[in-house]
Length: 345
Image (cartoon, rainbow, N blue to C red; front, side, top):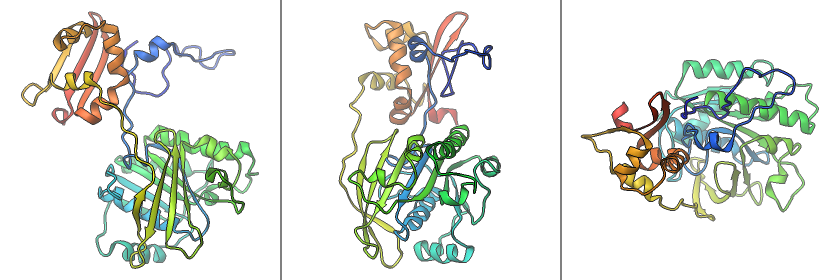
């Protein structure tokens, strides 16, 4: 078994899958010996690959913010100074028509169109062809990073009973699709009328929706006619935040007034800095055993501890130092490969 793992779930022996009593497990040692693929942010600090709910009361400006996110990601223009990962975006505007979309986009962005933003006013439903439609789109556009579904109600089947089980199943189906395609699915939904101290308890439906999703955004105005709103953010891959927004009267774009929560920054990791100094543009590749690496770095550290630390920090090594890291097992023993990412292009 190689130490380099590129799937979220990896099991040593799959021969017993499907047999009664089979339970897939992974030991802590195997987990530490695994290197998992990075999940680069769609919007740094705000939105990541996975399945998210975007929730607000009707007529609060959700669709304008969805178009704004879609346009910024498809063009690579930062959103409120948050860096974005440029790529193709599919927006399923299932409560709109082409004429309304045209007028909204023109009012928001003028004549600066983009070939990387695709829109549709019709789709199939969950379990009845929607997944296949999105998969086919991603095959045609492999650089797709975001699919927006506006709204959840439009893709639910008429047989849904809106129970916890059905809510959880709907979002879980979409979550499996997002994981399979390595994209972000952003699903627009409505809040319930009853207020709550916990904003996320205002999501219409059962707790199954939020329980299955990777996170949620809540857009809320004090009154419907207000041009200011708060955006509450909570998720598994980002910290909880509250942003204060104001809608521009001319373009109807949402502007960031201030962020109430400062983003937490990971403390510096000296080991990664030391590793980065091994590579240069003239020497962009390093290969050797963990023992060789410890010696090259001048570290008094056990080789397996060094490997574990790098396995866990592989994403930071790529993000902060532009270095790809591979840890494999060969007949001769363990082999570590470090390479400047630019040199792989």
